[in-house]
Picture 1 (cartoon, rainbow, N blue to C red):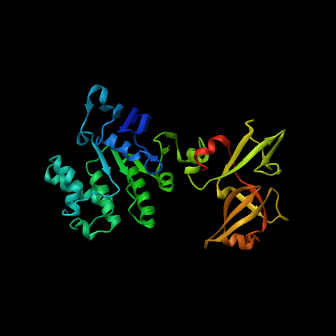
Picture 2: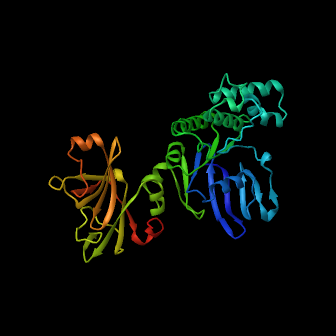
Picture 3: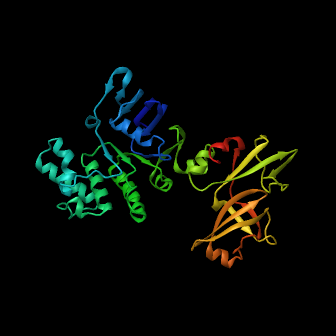
Length: 365
């Protein structure tokens, strides 16, 4: 599929601080692509490089087949000439302008005829669910409504590429959930390409066609569909970053594979790799627990039992290694799984990922 954004060997430093080094990435036309990573990893810097607010130290950036930045050739096309829309996390709507005037601003800069301007603004205002509020000032709007104004202003010129930099951060949880689905629906209706920056795994999984996971050093660890990232993690960092992660150390002694510091054999298929030290990665939802007399698996001890309303959360010790699991409270009550601290239990697993134990050092401190 044709790429609308192509980043080739891009490096960016601020003094002695290296943000990106030889970074290469492609975004396909018409997809919603998310850059996901921890705060400070360089996501926003990369967005600003694409938008033209910053220039790379080296490398090349192309948008829609046109090279917009290439220091080696002296190319640095200004942001307004890159024909993109952008929404920031602080909305950046002008407080002295009405909704109509905020949305109309890009068309006024482009000197569009008044009739076309009015029609386009009203159409876009309706598209983001703001009809009837055109004459209001931002101070008369909620945070979610202000975010819709910012979206409408970015979309009114019908850009082929829309850049969204943490646009939902300042909204409450309910609004964030509502807006992430609205953004995805808008992208589908307009058939535009969206490049979305976030540190929120749920948002990334919900809206992305593809996504790239970045680490704290600005390196891309894995690119793929949400399913590939979640179900086929490339390494422990990606696995851990995509949600609460458990890692159970496993060692090989002779022909046996033993758990933690004890002598329990692993009750599942052994690792395919013969590396003596392994780690089984799994999420809390992958863990099954049962009373000692009713289940088969690894013997453990409940070290912490926390009632969280709809869920029971347990921290379990298995031969010196701890793992976390949760179970719906009604299931725990009906299934005799309301454990107390200090009680024994049996642990088994629905799904496991195998990692070389040495690779865990960056995620298990």
